[in-house]
Image (cartoon, rainbow, N blue to C red; front, side, top):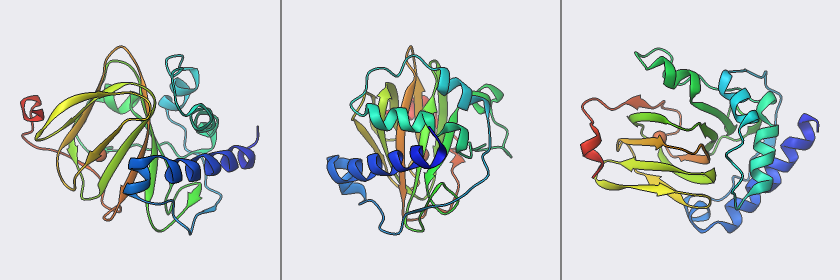
Length: 203
Ligand code: FE
């Protein structure tokens, strides 16, 4: 399947998701300014890991899951936190590419949205950002933490909302997780690690 065909499938599936999933729909409608654009792909190791992943079989959104895997070779895989003192294992294994946004394959000035691939047995440490964020699990499962809230394990179709600048974290155990992540409002400010936030702050 070529890039244009895969991208059309992703676009169709995302419009459907934003129109029909209650929390995604409430968080934000699909932007009306989206158009496809050419970008130079950026490859990182999690792209290969996700394409070989066998643990994402259970999903309420198999068309979206499969299309986002097929889009991997054409996406700009991100190196978040690259100028920080971050755990090299996390940096090598955590996977993310932008789907909708100024610099993404689906151009929009109104929101940013991302594919997150998180392999088994990985901890995404506490971090925060001004943008409000909604995670929607496409496939797999993981434990979601947010300061002031009890940790919860989410599976396909379930969501986690993260308030502006409130620290949150993500832990996978025996399963990987693939999530659709949407940012609204202050979406041009990158996330930073949350100083002094420990796991006991999750509750
Ligand atoms: Fe976040």
